[in-house]
Length: 141
Image 1 (tube, rainbow, N blue to C red):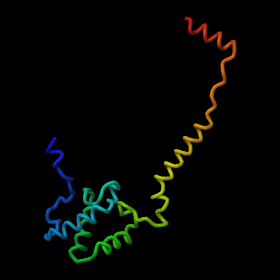
Image 2 (image 1 turned 90 degrees about the vertical axis):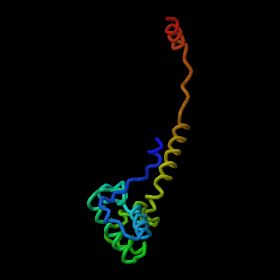
Image 3 (image 1 turned 30 degrees about the vertical axis):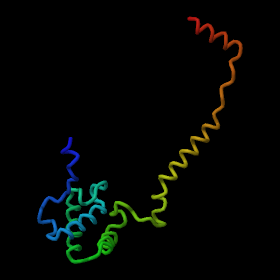
């Protein structure tokens, strides 16, 4: 159990030559890659994915980091090429407002429906005499 707790995430770099020789640059490339979506897997970052496209994107990120480009330049280049979908966390702007607001809207709509349905619930009318007699006969069995 201790070994499982101590085990870190498995990064997808399959070829050690893929890693940058400077540890600071490599750490920066990994940090950038963790924010980018694998366009094949879609639920993993390019650092976690083993897909060929993710490997290509990791190489691009590392090349641009080695060239001295800023994080914003690298992200901008990737977004220009693949769109905002390449980001695991899309930016907050007017185009993504509905995306960011949808969890809050879903909760509010759910609460509204729950409250509305609760208020509409009408208690059952009391039993009339024939229903009471029938119920008594069923209970006596």
